[in-house]
Length: 576
Image 1 (cartoon, rainbow, N blue to C red):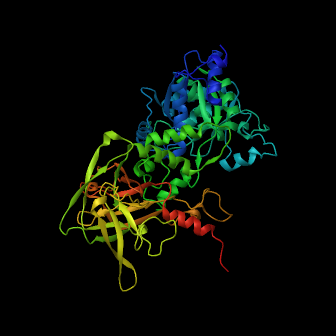
Image 2 (image 1 turned 90 degrees about the vertical axis):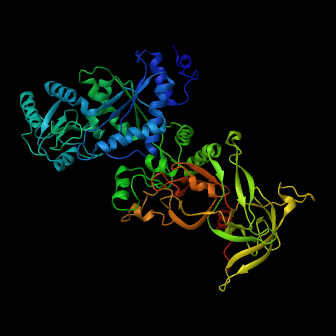
């Protein structure tokens, strides 16, 4: 069977180089029992948006070819791993829309087999116990331009190595005093082949195996062998593991492996204005720069979930980004546009005034409330409609009024007429200011014949404003989240600087005294709405309480007048 004849489960041919490679292997009979991939997170932190791409690739490739994807925790470093992370990772993967079924594995579940493979290498003269310290090992390793030097312990006999390795396992030696190393080539151009460490001594309690072990395998040693033990056919890794592939293959070629997986690398996901280094994310949390791993500004899946991102939007984004062989940064707007497209279809509309300015409709009957029909979602007829109360006094956005309006400003200004969303035309007759000159109230009149948006005389207005009844408004504070970092590549800093220097001081703005449509008082925690003309807002599942939802912005609408003005001001020539 040729590659062109090999189709995926959905009947389509390969769409990227990974799928081409898998199709070729299937055609050549190199995966007779079907495709098996794996997602191998380390349980030392929470998953982030970069992991989302890897999850989509690993589970997606398996699904397209009718195979299976394993979830394997590479839990080989007990000093940094916790059961809490294991549970969180499984929850996040399921939330993203994937399931591993019964195919759950742990590297720690293969510790005995890995130990046996190491003994096999020693018996073949391909591994030895080394007494060099970590610093000495680095010194002996050489550089990219200079070959390494053989360890003085490299020629120990097989018998001595077997004895020492067994005593390492038995706990006779302190941490850091001995390692087990593969005997490959200290002059190899690829530094990964210069007698890499397979095991180190670490007297630490493991979250699954307890104190059964005091030697732990290094990632490079455990990774490929676990793949083989699980029957993985395709080990899909990010590009930083490309130079590790010769070592991956060397290990499998020199042990009695039950299968021979194929490692293929693809570019990892990097999104502008974010970082995905676990170490740096941990610093953000531990040093108090954010409220935790689930802070809505964090690129973790927990943070994105709390902010209001949907799994459908994230999966669509990962699919759009695709699979490539070169690293590149993706503009945050690509991710945000996928979120907007998804929320536009599913989020019900509500009216909320975040920076309120009072409007008194002087000819509207005092004490009267008129209920106006409002569409819940124009993209979804099944969402139906609701009624919103209209009264003599309403709130509008302060930005929707200009005392001296630019030519293309089609909102409210002295003598100008606009339409209140779902209601009447109103005209600004008078501007009321306080002692400092700040506008505090607009006095307007409405046209009672314009309730359906088409006055008898046929006149039209370009401005349509959202509003909330002053009498019925639900008052709340609202959080506006922005990028956590102010620059597209936060980790690029001058010498002596820290990535913290690139943090955005305006990543969180809390607006007090916002006026919300009364129906929002009953918002369910975790629900998302489009605040009309403002953006998409999420009822925070952590901070919301019954009858008192705490809203924050998930993502803005594509453009607002304020943004347009800001861009125009930035583009304007400087006056001299």
